[in-house]
Picture 1 (cartoon, rainbow, N blue to C red):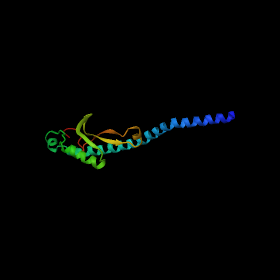
Picture 2: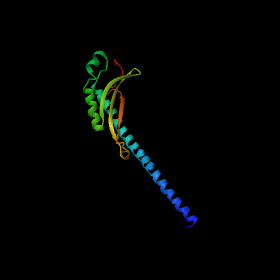
Picture 3: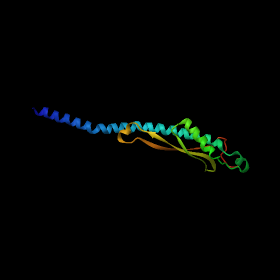
Picture 4: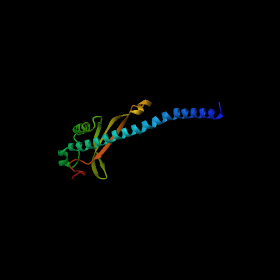
Length: 150
């Protein structure tokens, strides 16, 4: 066998070795990119749904308390039930965990929190079947009330 032929055989073996090493890394990278996009889509869907749920929950402000004292108070558990109902309509996998009134810079907002379970596709090969995604939204009340005594 000529030296030229021996060198060609060694080089073809090197190419096979590089493919064997880099193919799993390439597949993992493709899985991260694909699943990352999928997780981002699921996060955005949950974020929009929790935002809509917060606006819906704002309809459960106690009007009697507002008229008597000018203070915003959510009727519980009605506000949580309303938010959960809206969330299910927009994203069936979303679970609403809390609805509350928060004050930021002198104004009051409705804060809605929840979570959803996002599933992966390619990363299941590596044992990662999904992630729990926590979402939160802070929305203005549906009635346009954003300060006490307004």
